[in-house]
Image (cartoon, rainbow, N blue to C red):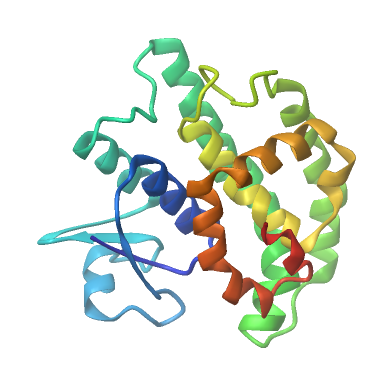
Length: 219
């Protein structure tokens, strides 16, 4: 299987975390911003990453890819079957993909991607406003809902954890805001220590060291 995208993308990272936890081997090929070639274009007609090519099958969108993998390899289960636990897992993925990501995008894109990758001026006022006006609500919510078990759903590693952890890692590359939330810091620290997750982050390190304001936040 080939996963097309850029490792620092929260959506690409989420898929890689999920694959690592499931024991699914994937080859990562760079894509996005005009890269990826015909195979990427066929799997992702709107140029969104990540995109997956598995033989003659291609699909884009991290959630679609993850649900494909879950059906392809049901064990270990990462999307709970209990109705309430499944609903909570889907909620946390939605929270991460929309609310948390949208705030993080304004910060990460304008502080890192635009000036350091695209070589254009980022909108620092927009990044600062997102950190000041939007981020605290999301972090306060998360601080209050992390269970004592250290896992968001069913007291075990699920899609909920990998989905929420991924955009938080991007935030840590360009902001110290999370340091005011000890429960989040403990939770994300424990997630990043898992061998499967640490291996994905180590593969990401070379790219981040040349881009991030805080490359030490990788591990």
